[in-house]
Amino acid sequence: MNFFVADVRDGLGPYLGVFLQQHDFMESQIGLISTITSLCALIFGIPLGILIDKTPHKKSLIGLCICAIVLATLANYFYPHFSFTLLAQMSVALCAVCLAPAFAALTLGIVGLADYSRQVSLNEAYKHAGTAFSALLSFGFALWYGIGSIFVITAAMGIFSLIFLSFIRKESINHKVARGQEGDTRIGLWEALSDKSVLILGGAMFCFHLSNAYMLPLLSQRAHTLGIDSSGAYAAATILIAQSTMIVISLVCMKLLSANNAPHFSKVYFVLMGSCFVALIVRGGIAAHFENLAGMIATQILDGVGAGITGVILPILVAIMLRGSGHINAALASVMTFGGIGAALSGSLGGFIAQYFGYFYAYIALACAAGVGLVLWIASFGMLKAQNNKFTH
Image (tube, rainbow, N blue to C red):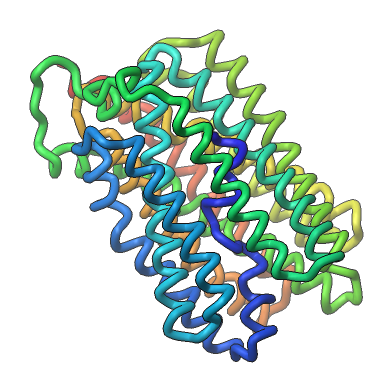
């Protein structure tokens, strides 16, 4: 299911802008749609996480989200008008932001905390493999049959996702385990969301995405100014490099976490998260100093390292730190909202500095944001250890 849903979660993804331009949308209209949908995802992220914690119908909710994304995407193909496109993309954004904590809850409810790190790692590996597969498939079909074929691929992936979802038995999901509740303990929602560990993880994710989100768009913009082909086969190759790296990193994380399979915060989690920031700092430095193809490949590999580790480690850390609270998925949605805010601001930070001071200083500034995140993470180690398993006592 993770393999096939990878292509569905983002709808058209990077192809949306191309499709809308073909239907005479202005750049300002495309940008406005992107901004509004991003804001909706940020506003409704935590409420959807709360819903996932409370509902015993997680499987049905995931199925509903997949259907809604596919139907909204297909309908957008037949009605490419501004108002309808805005509504369709808002639906896609809300369903996508719901699927991340829903998958985390489904996984935790099936395998439990003891096997959670292994299964999350496998989920991420399959997800990245699915993303790479769909990128290659989409590139080939778009080249031969046009952008319309992307809609067919998204629908087909959605159907396969639903087929594999139907194989999961409802009785195999423990909903108390899925929300991190132990016994009959009741913890207030605000107490869980305002917990120091949640705020620290949120701050770390804010810095990570503030640094990471706009690095790839900056690379494409600079490649265009240098006369390097930043579309077609080159774009597909960069996606495949990053996603292939993420697959390897996910499996490496599985090995490391399986060897240290303890349901509490330990040095292996601390080192892995710290490695994400180190990879981002190095990535920014390479992007600033090397404009050739080798430099771009290196930055994509490091993108795979950072994104691969965070994809695995973040839900596991939230599950460990909020164990016993009964609000694990709301907390995960909260941390992801912090990251979304950082990603939204990343474009403004990188774009402004690139325009007025040049690409070199833009990459250095983005790398510095990762440096702030690394300092915050190192400084918080003792506090995170002290907060460990707070809600189980």
